[in-house]
Amino acid sequence: MKRSLMFLLILFLFYNSVLGQRNDFQGAVYNVGIGAVIGAGGALINKGKTEKAGAVFLKGFWQGGMGGYLTFESKRMLRLAAQNEDWKWYWGSRLFNAAGSSIKENAALNRDFWEQWHFNIGFMRLEFHTKDQFLFKPKVMPVTLYYTFFATIYADFELNNSLRTSFLAFSIKRKEEWGNWGGSAYLGLFVTAKEYSDYYPLLSHEILHLYQAHDFFVLNTLMHRPMLKLKERYSWVEKLSEFIYLEAPAGILRLAYLYESNRAVNYYDNFFEREASFYSGQLRYW
Image 1: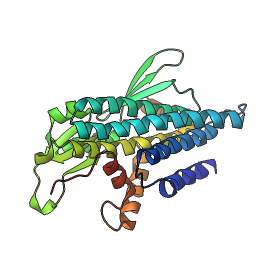
Image 2: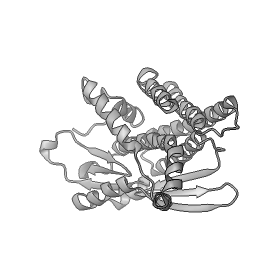
Image 3: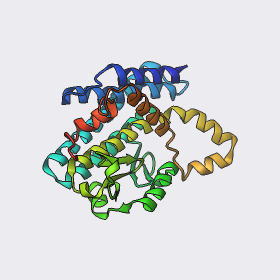
Image 4: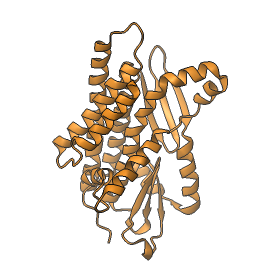
C-alpha cells in the first residue's frame, strides 16, 4: 500500500506540478520536490520497526530535497556547456548529478546521505560505501550492456565526445529518410548523426535524457525490502546482487515516455522532450 501511494505521489508531481519548467525556479521546484517526495516516501517504506515515522519522514524529505537540488544544478550546467561550448561543464555536471542521485538513493533507503555514493561509467555502476569502512563495489548494468553491445555493432565509437561528456558516445551517418533526426539517447550512451557530433546543444539534450534515467533509477529503493527477503531465501540472488545492478526502473521511464508521446500534439509536446530542450536550448539540425 505504501509503495502504491509513493508511486502515485511521484506521478502526481510529474504530471500536475511544474511540468512546463518555463524558468529555473520551476525547474528547481520540480527537481527538489521529486527528490523530497521520493526520499520521504522511500524512507518510510524502509523504516526500521523501532524508528519513529515522523523523524524518518523529515530526514528522508530534507535529504531527498538536497539531492534533488544537486540534480537541478547538474541540469543547469548542461545549458552552460551548450552556451559556452565548454566540455568542463559536462564533467562538473556529471559529478553533481552523481552526487544528487546518490543522496536521493540514500534518503529513500533511510540512510545518512553520505553512506553510499555511485558513479555510472558506460555499463558499469561504481559504488563507494563509506559507512564504517571504505568499500568499492563495481557492478554491471545488464540492460545498459545490451545497448552498448549493439551500439558498437551499428555505430562508430566517438572517443572525442566520450572524453568530452564522460558518457559513451557513438555516431552514425544520417540518412535522408530520417528527416530531422540528429541524435538519440539510450541507457548509458548516446548516438548522434556524424554531422552534428560537435553540436553542443544536441550533446546537452541527449545527456539530459540520460539524467532522466538516473532520476528513475532511485525507484529501485522501493524494492529494497523484497530484495532482502529474496537474498535470505536464495543464495544465488545474493551472489548476483554483488556484481549486478538491474536497471528495472528504466521500464517505467519508457512507459512514461510513451504515455507522454501518445498524448502529445507534436514531438516536443512531451514532458521529457520539453525538459531536455529547456536545459539544452533550441535544437536546430534541419
